[in-house]
Length: 330
Image (cartoon, rainbow, N blue to C red; front, side, top):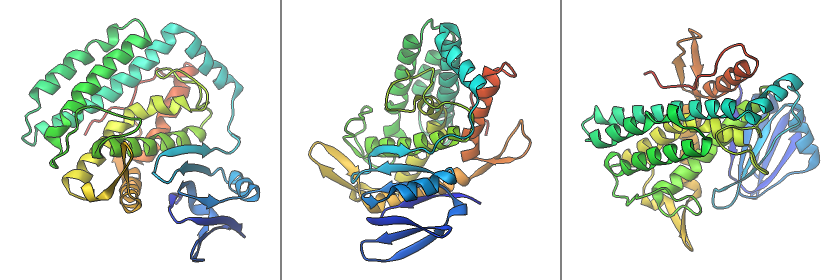
């Protein structure tokens, strides 16, 4: 079974026979069989060469890079061998056509905000007073189907998230003054966790898109632009409530992550390396978690749910079946 590998030690990564060899600054070596690697996540400084990149490309292994502070730097994506000119043309046509684009954007927000609602409902059932937040989100979600443009839709989604984030001080048991979402740079513990874990979601979705015939730069909710895989941002909206948000509540409420896991630099807060290790371990476990899929009638992992979204989009583009975003049912 293939898995993601998270590399924190500064040093060198090279090819050795049919293995990836990691050599730390202390000259400690670790060999990983190439067949079991799905993606590589590299935190900090590592030395790579073109021979190594060519080697992992042959095995369709993506590499995601993070800097010293744990902020996402970029990804190395091997040349896509699973291409379809017809799918690409249909994918672009659905962006160019305003009605087709809006319909897909609405579905991403419809599914993502429903999953937000399910998170709040879960905590209300456990005694937290979230009636006002749930009522407001229901009211706002009712507007999704009536918007006339993607920009208007983004405004509705922004108001839903503002309401949702306003409930987090009730859900999180630690005393954290979380008033609003701040991205660049994150200014408190919760914003730092959101930024870090959302990036993990983004890179996982990107890796799963890469395994299909979709082009990750052609998107519908987020405007396609340079230097980003915006379709990954679209699909991530669906999985952030299910994986990232629930994970943040768990890490903070179980005191797995506390104030001591953060360091301050200038005007922002970032996660220490040991904290990032704890987070990626939990994240990897959640991606492996399985559910009984209602349509497929078999158990699938959270990671595979991401790829299924890409497959559903392909069916939508080719006219086989209308796309419906994934919604939590348990």
